[in-house]
Amino acid sequence: MSSIRVEDGYFTLFNIFHTDGPEAQQLLFDQWRSLPPAHTQPGLVSGNFHRGFDGASVVNYAQWESRAAYDAFMSEQATRGRLGSALAVSRLDSIACEVVHTWDPAPRISLDQPWYTVVVVVKSAPEDQAEVLKEMTFDPPELADTPGYVSHAVHRGLSGEHVVKYAQWRDEESFRAFVSRPQEPSPLDELSVEVELYFGEIEYIRERS
Image 1: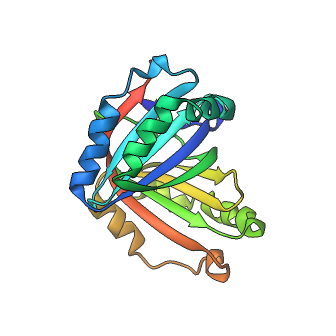
Image 2 (image 1 turned 90 degrees about the horizontal axis):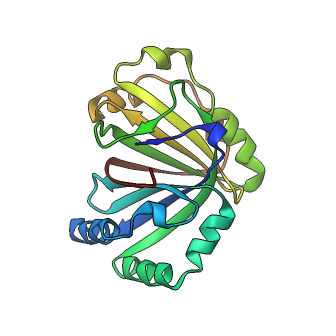
Image 3 (image 1 turned 45 degrees about the vertical axis):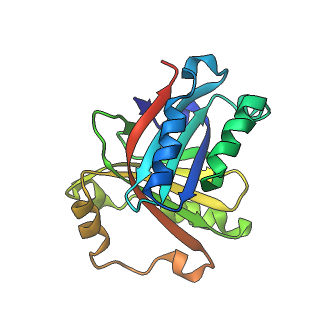
């Protein structure tokens, strides 16, 4: 089980793999399941692999002790070879982040409780990132009483261009009911932002403990 907490200070990545369909999705999972145990990789905390319900995406929520540990991993010849194999069947968007805000209780990622997971990626101009963060870290009071809501965490992209929310819901129906309710205009409507949503479920966790 993985936890998402501000105080851990992990170097975090949203590795979003785009595929042509379920067959390529499965090839990626087969490759990841064949990796050496996580404890053999210095600095790796966990990799949390979510299968997209669209059949065309996989999101790996990866936690590292530091950027230096991740850079050392990426410099390894074996890593480059495995990444090349993955990119033969997919396209990768990688967003380096830090956790800046979580709901209380903070999210836990567990195979025993595969929540309906929503990853919201907001891309903005660097000068607008602070405003996007302000909006996305605001938790409306009614959220605590929203049927089916579980938890969420907000991440600041280290490049200055992204804010990413990792949210957990009991099921799709609860999420759809929440987003379909009447809403006040958002400050983000006044900004030039790009928003992408990914819906999936945790399927494989590679962790050192």
